[in-house]
Length: 137
Image 1 (cartoon, rainbow, N blue to C red):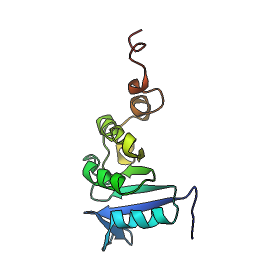
Image 2: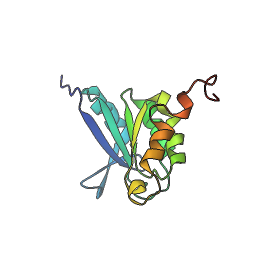
Image 3: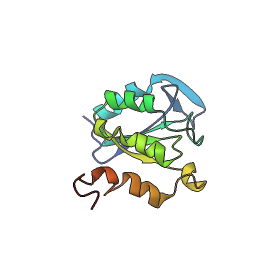
Image 4: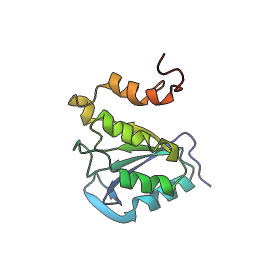
């Protein structure tokens, strides 16, 4: 059996189906089916890009991410459409289901998200992780 420990797969999807050839073609293969296949060969995680959202600053496709997270047990990294710290906080709600991170592109280039602010919101030591009995000290 093939195994790819430490290697990640990337899935680009349009309407839940795998996009190929630089996003020019849309296959009949469901993104979730491909995720199961690459998980079966031992990838360590999957970068999932909703190409209809990519670069639009319209927010991540939460429904598609939830479906992907319910399908596989490897960590998923969200990509496409993330435009604000609010979007990142919404994605943080999927962390317990296996969302391991997010890829930011246009939102950083345009200044919609400032990296230090994003790290304070969802990175190590974020407000959500401070015990409530010490938060108001």
